[in-house]
Amino acid sequence: MALSTPLFSPARFHHQRNSTPATTTTRPLFPNVPRRTQPRPSAIPPLSTVDGATTLAVIGGSSVAAIAAVISIADPEKRRQQQAEEVGGGDKEVVREYFNSTGFQRWKKIYGVTDDVNRVQLDIRVGHAKTVENVIKMLNDEGSLRGVTVCDAGCGTGSLSIPLAKQGALVSASDISAAMVAEAEKLAREELKASSTEASPTPIAMPKFEAKDLESLDGKYDTVVCLDVLIHYPQSKADAMIAHLASLAENRLVLSFAPKTIYYVLLKRIGELFPGPSKATRAYLHAEADVERALNNVGWRIRKRELITTQFYFSMLIEAVPA
Image (tube, rainbow, N blue to C red; front, side, top):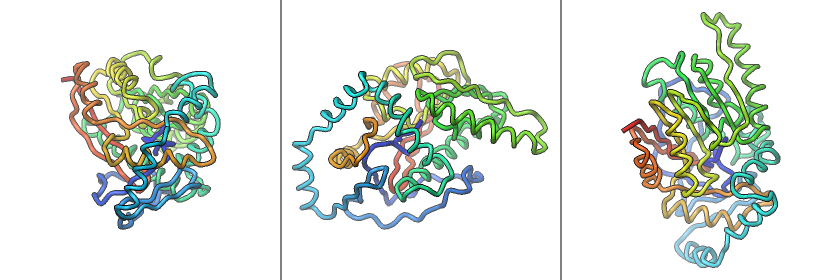
């Protein structure tokens, strides 16, 4: 599922950069997603909710000082506690409830091809598509994926699982949301059935979909991928999740997360002051050094890394291998 990182995430903020996002020479996986030119950024870019309900433009040093003063007395943790109390649990319960209800409808649109999305949602769709495209290129750098076992942890609506299956990978896909898993399985049956009838020399193996939280996953896979999931959990829980994912992988572990920097923390805190009419999941940023430390602690090292950004989406993508 997303986050979003954020795609990316229900986090109520965005970022826009001067640097050019990583690009690939592979054929676009999402032909309906437009390639957009980034506008020139202001001192601090506009902030918006995923629903586009709240937008705040901040320009100039005096505005930053004023916002910093407001942030200093804000208490986003109070809203997080209220969310947990409403569903009777912690982070995991909040995530499951959200992506089985309003979150499912929202992200189904973002991940899909419908035109019924606003500017923010469309931009997040572009960012997520870039992440998926770059992951597939990353995996193909080692050769053909035919027969390679892949665990897609947090599969969402199957935006990665389905193209991997088309390339011959043996995919086990899971998500904490039963609604997401049902949608992914439906789309996979439709798309893979169509692909199988197109003069395919070998049959395409249907991914195995199941509703499971990340900690419940088991088995061994050549490659484990977990995109835009860590944003829903604090670093203390993310450490254990990274260790568990690494225990499932034999050769490669691919992760994405919302990077924690002073600048992004400021944007996130501003966004929490304008949560919009609908509640979303809690959003956590992770320092790249913390993620790398968690990998090193279980005997893995980062081999590749790249930052993927659009106007409203930013995600650090890493590939780790046994040290």
